[in-house]
Image (cartoon, rainbow, N blue to C red):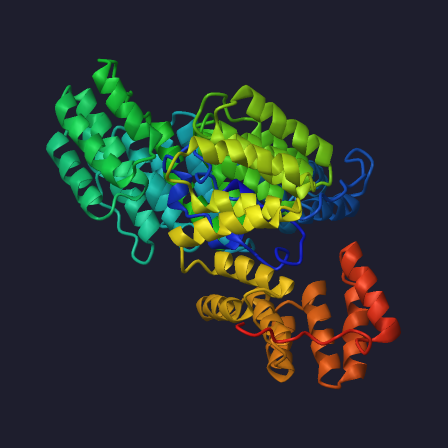
Length: 593
């Protein structure tokens, strides 16, 4: 969800590691149709700062210098530069396996699959994993060049083991189909221990049965996939499309309608019904290359979840070699490159998505965040405003602009934009929108309005830890409804015991209630989990002072000053370092709290 990317910097909110962690990217979502509303998109990636590009000239440096420059470029995520350096070094050095392997991998990551196929290293001195990847690359390149027989021969030449076995198994049936080997394509591949890969293997088999005109078997496969869960409605979409092509439009409509009951926001299902109602032509059967490309997305997305970014990027490059127009692959390439700090290359990837497609707005939103993450706030807001201007009714674009405005401390405008989004949702407002608006309202000094949004959101999601923590901490920090707030924060901590932010709120509640001994224990646990948070350290310093541990209190306050506190917190801490808390009244326990 767009506003999960960045929340404001108030004491109540900096410690809420809110929805980015709660909404991890699922591998199946990479291939599934997504809704276009404000809750549809995954959070933009949080990249490292963009690294400087190496300055060595490939025409002038020594072989060793080129190797070092290539290694530095690859470590910094600049794959195009790395490919150029390693390629030049390999030409100078001949058969040096280390350089040739680096040149192969760099060319692949840069997207030059044709060159990577020619550089694929072999031999006993080469790392086995690299050899296996080279076989996969050569097989995909043959398939991309419409040489199905060569592709099939390459995949048959050896059984690829870890870590490229799943990818090879998913692509091999399509190579057989391209070679005209119908029976060889219908092999019912097994991928034990890989449920995502197995789903796409089964989906490919259903498609291959249709291609072989064995429609009954294709239907059997589709029905089994739907019965087993139908993630993202992919099985229903493919089954319905086949039925449309078979002119069984009423059956296709029934499939789409049943799937919509489970996936009501799926625009592709809605489009399918509209297409049938309008007597329009059915979607064409995907080509072999298109289907093989989609098969590679699943292992790539799985590797991204497992934080194997380089291999994931390699698979995505292979997928795009087979189908350069595959939007979800470009989206994921942008995510990987952004995470690696190559923001310019990430922008180029996001820019490859076509206007009017389902993922275009999401790509534009992520592009805006590449500027934000490079501290180009004006560039980020410009990109977000342009996106919303081009699609003024698109709620995802509106929420993303509101998110960026909040990150840029333009809270009033952020809340104003969310007012329109929330009004457009009618009676059933997504609680996350209320949460986001509350964040902006609280920072804009409109606490009562923020409190109202949080209260409404909690009625919908009474057990949501982030909501409980936000509202309860706000009360605690204001000295209001302390007993009720303590119970709410305890509930949040019970649901998320490893959250330093929530433990800090719990400790601060005990502090406000005057139970300093318990406050110290809770805040010490919080600072272990959030050692770099200035507010947690500040709270712990206050609690130490109240129990007489004044030296430790001063240590914590001094630590706050090196942790980039807000201007307000910095001023408070400097005052406490001069005079402590002796001149400040201890928090009073208010009757009824």
